[in-house]
Length: 66
Image (tube, rainbow, N blue to C red):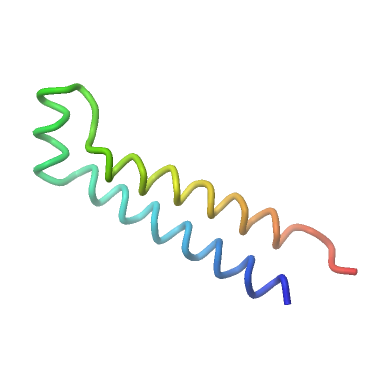
């Protein structure tokens, strides 16, 4: 039962990373980078959350089942 959950976490993490990359190339992120030097908070949360989910899913898939 853990393998489907791990796979779902991995896929969800990859999707969040893709959305984060897309958000980093948006106009609002460009304007934020112009004035503050960093992308928007939404972009950062999408990328960080996606990385955490992808790592957790990958770790879950790499573990041996009993």
